[in-house]
Image 1: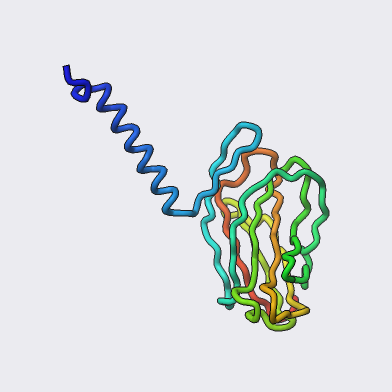
Image 2: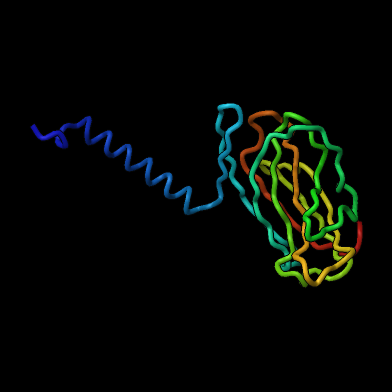
Length: 175
């Protein structure tokens, strides 16, 4: 008897094909980040990165991590943290054991951000504002691609938002 003609073999082959197509679509979309924390897996989608009034911003998703110590916020008030070639961290209050959303915000080329440029960064989880952070470029350098690394505490040790939007807005001074 022909094994491929059996209904259960055709079902298994079709199921494998659908799984492979689904994996291929996720790889092509590039918008979903999967991470594992203590054996459980969660999918997170980056819904949007929008740069208001400025094409000089490069946003790079760095993923998600489990915070290993408490850290106070350092950029929730304007003008925020100074951007540099070392990409210092801007953050809301980080709590040990919580999940953290991480990204990098830099100028597109070393001379893109002039002296005293300030940005507001709004981070949304599942459409709800999670934090507003600020960064500034008070010491512009022509030979370094300046920027910051961003860490946002999700407020939970597991689960939490499944989609994120980050809106970076250039400001004309502090509000």
